[in-house]
Length: 312
Image (cartoon, rainbow, N blue to C red):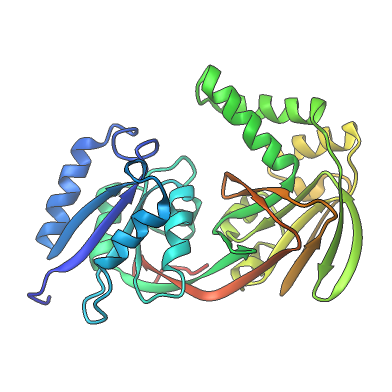
């Protein structure tokens, strides 16, 4: 080990960070562990900054020495990882992961332990692995991006959670609520590797995490692993079709639902007459101007992983 201390910046969201998950004591152990491994540590709470850009500008000032880049650690759920990855992508600074989310798909697909102290050992002593990052316009998505019903479902779920608490039942209840009351059909022109298809759809979904896609029993999981755009489109919006789709989604067999089609491509472009489209990106709602360009940048992000880990 070099005698020179390395900068290590921990970025966390208080809503899904150490305080929210009652892991304050673990945080103190993490600091001791990183210090013993020769890191100079500074923590950045996302809520303390008016804009995430400002936070990352301060963070990256600590990691500009090419001979001592250190590590930037994202501590939180996949939304926090997404935000940090967007800045580290295509840089030489590796990202460490302390999984504090509900599903932790990114950590799981890379075999990063969900135990925080074990994950910290990976950050300190693991290997650097290049992983694929997908983009919809300039927005990174590590897990998924979608249009139509799914953004509505996310908004409705958060409303239920605010009033009733975060319970799995709320996900199903809000899903039914959207299907029964908020069904909308998008009229799009979808260009898949240069071939354009007119589509009327209540939902189009793009996945970049093969573990999440495999959990849904989607055959395109392997395509995502190879760095291709992996998509799912629903071709009908009548109530019965959508209820069957929700039921198959709950069972993890969405590809068996009627009028659900999966595909893969090098690039997808979505054209629409609307000035803006509402998109759910790794669980966060954003408004994007069409056309939407969906693509994958292969091996664009360095992540600290266990030795001999899988790649995404």
